[in-house]
Image (tube, rainbow, N blue to C red):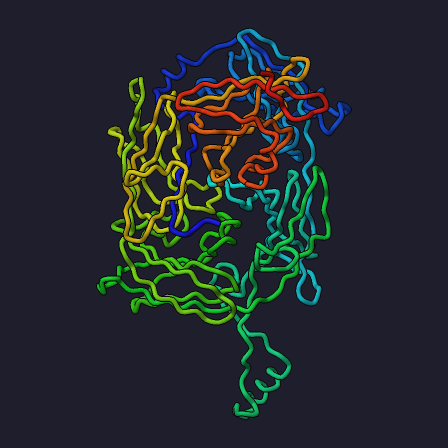
Length: 608
């Protein structure tokens, strides 16, 4: 479990951020004389060619080579001519089917890179398109009657691309549906995996208006109200209705407002799962009332937006879907209120840098914040929020190596991303652009946990350390307290490590299907999102390469099939450790580790 008020450092590198004039790029684009050809089929056999399927060819590691697209003919065949020498990925897509990657064992898995030498012609490549799975059911009220117009999301349980946390994501628009006049929904085109179904009935306030909770009336309540309407006053024997306030709330199959208690649906390839019915009921609600003031007792700013959002592990699992439920603003007396709040754990955040409307620019000027976490269980909650200045994080990048520093330091940008962002790189504080002199700065930094990423890469350089107050936090949690500002020094080195080799069968033939997983030998380093874990696919020639791992002791194993990100689960790594090959890396070391698959598909062995 993550602790509060912590900052973690990880890194993502994406190619292609080097800025050049258009004519310069055009003049340096390589030409080629190679060719790639093959056939796309529908299903597990060669009986049905995929006609008019779209096939995409993209180079890896060379931004000068533009991606190309073609369409299959009536026999499902495709051809790419004049292909430059490089490594490529190959994908196929067709409406109604799941995208396919060449060499992938299952839809959604990474494919096998295809190395092409100058003048080489590769033919006979094969891709297979399969139909996605289906999840269908009915939304019904407490009396079993169908409910129309209920938005339903079928969310896949996987691993966040940024922090490696377990999270729910919407695979595509096909996973979003709305119940029809029979209360039925159907989500289709789903890749195999684990799913959670979420229904979000409209609140009583109606579309576009404020939510307003209400009180259900019993038969006795109605009788008392009728008696009062006839002129008889309420008294000890005729009290007014006192039923609790209730309203609709998002609910997860089989009928819980808590996503941690939702039933997981394991969907196989092409499987159609019906009868996933979601009960739509009323939940007891409460009001959250807040008072906002300045820490120093001064006057409040003119506009102070306040947001209400889920908090805790449930929010991390929901990712971006746990974003602000509602936004309000403080009145002239410093008061703010949220009505109709269902049970759960919430974060109330006052932040002057929050836009009041979606798409609106954030307010200018120094930002102030105040935050509180509350638990709602049906009773009203009162919070006090004291505004104080937001924190900042600033620093510089340093290059230590044998060669000269990169010519364009500003080609890389740093990004801070909070947990549960689901890969949304704009979810964190503003700033992070590296200036020509190597400095950077973040503003409006709130207490909590973040990932520090770098978008783009410096050719031949990798991150060595990220220090704060003399301590290295390149792969560790860094506490960030209210009122504290950070001073970071991010050091790059050109002494880049590498593990490379070839994976073959007993006859010496390349085996391109497995995923090569490298992970730390020390179990204390098995943390989600660590830069010390790397999963790579060998090319069709069996060659693989893992670059830029920090120095240390590692374990290496070849896996027939693995879900991307599954290595963030320590239990998964524990099951792999006994069969893994152990090796060590020093700074700048290039190590070769060939692998051989034993007969019968056993674990890879070290030929040496």
